[in-house]
Image (tube, rainbow, N blue to C red):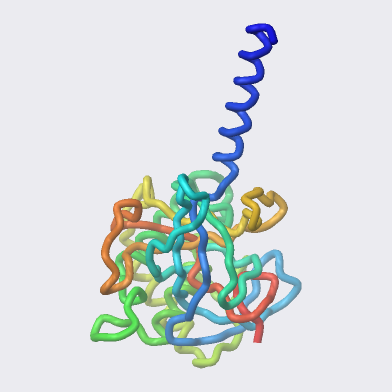
Length: 264
């Protein structure tokens, strides 16, 4: 074979290897148990009507791709909040993710500046209220606080600073805790008014749900983006997961509805 042919063949093989490496998502996520449970009817653009779902943080089992073996090795358990309302995730369901630093697609807004400002507020709101990361103890949030934080995040994601849960691109209907979840959401939203512009810059989150089990990107699906910051208590820190971290969605559900939550 001519030298030029050998060079061309080597180049093709290299491109194939690179393409394969790029296609494999870096993390495998498995939905485990929710935190203190609350449910409610929610609506957002993209849904045909109000749907009942679990509202609150979730526990994710995080596995990281091992480049040598091609398998996903256990990394940690991680609390997570939902930053993508549309999608389908079920209990013990498996999906895939990569880390990202841009503004998630689920954040609506008139322009890039408005979306960026909303994302800053969302990250600020969650990180300044770390009680959702604990399951017990004096700092732990109860079901109403967990749900209120999640609802506040959804409202900012879809409607920016116009925090009206009865109108706009996101609406909260009746809940298992009456009006207390809406009241808690209002408190979280008000507490975020002092958020710092640019606060979310460089903070990572899981861009998830857009890969199939074979590592192929699914462009037609909404991602299940997840937001998180600290590893659960008693779980040793891992270099790949900085203390301040975001992923995709605190509201993944226990049923199989069009979103990532569970329909009841």
